[in-house]
Image (cartoon, rainbow, N blue to C red; front, side, top):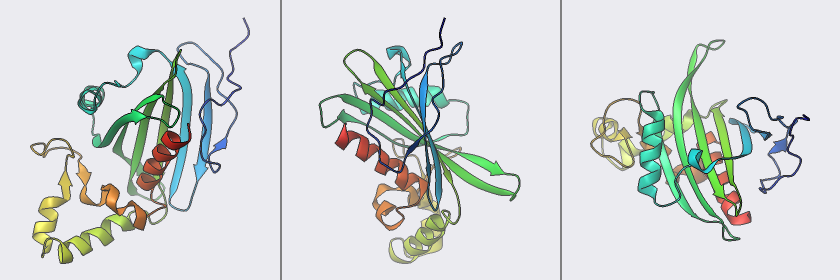
Length: 212
């Protein structure tokens, strides 16, 4: 039997996401399209494929998405950053989650963050999956340092109060343990750090919903 290879691109992506050689279907692996983005502070790879509804994020509510992400990441050092749902410009239902986890660059002995996008679009006859990995590169950590300094001075008055408010889960104020979202990762700061990997994730979500 000939291997199945995707040749069509059902989702319109920004022009700077470059299509790579497709991944053929294999045992337990769907045929997929791979895109890569290299920017000054972020390296991203997208894996796009059709999959079964039972593996998709829920479309019904943001609460159901949060619950699904909590189940998927239970027992791992993963922080929830953002979830969302809605309709694309052409009327297709979508849902997404953004999470982060730490990764260690052995060559530089440096701890960085990887932001992960899980997005589903409900086509009439299938679910389309967009899984993205966005890695910190260069001086992307300057976002944390600069915002910590500014909020300590302008928003909270001193460093102790700023540190206390720094780590929070965006959907559960009682959650204080493990890896958590940082104050600097709020969407309000993206415009000042457009090349940061988290800014790139949110930019991609906006593009997909507005152009498909």
